[in-house]
Length: 254
Image (cartoon, rainbow, N blue to C red; front, side, top):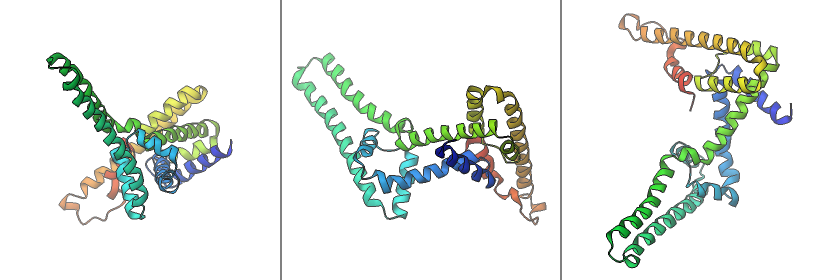
């Protein structure tokens, strides 16, 4: 393994030791944190990176909010303002182009209603493109793209560790497993790149997930039971945050 792979291996091993419902979610959360920190420490003043952000017209709603929260907490609003200024100027240019296109309709096409409608449609299509960029920003968001790439690398690293290291596999089988999304991603990678190990790992991973979901089901039952007035005096145990952990198991951790 190269140094990069060694670092990823250590990250995954440490995440498993923290006994989270999904170590890959935990690793990705750390990757996201590093990305946002790097955005302010490195990317804000990098012209090439700013071009990428401007081209995508910013970030998705989720990452814009996280970047804003970081900026407010760490007094980095000036850096964010510089990037936002570039994005907003690009939006202004988009709107100007649409407006110019629209103004030219009556000047160049006479009063022929068909020509006006066709050209207006082109102008409105430009506006709809902006709407599409905003609504589907997850597809173009630089942070989402970065995390998607690293999520694939992390899952691939875990697949290598499981298929080539029996002692690690034994340790992993004592963990809480993965969220459903990462389980599916991992199985696809193993089937594609580690075919010889697929059958045995499929059995091990499904067994682990069944064990994990059974545990959560029991904890949820305890959570519900202790909300019954007859048992309200019973002390809370690990089931206290079982609702949150069950959601993490189903859809992953934000």
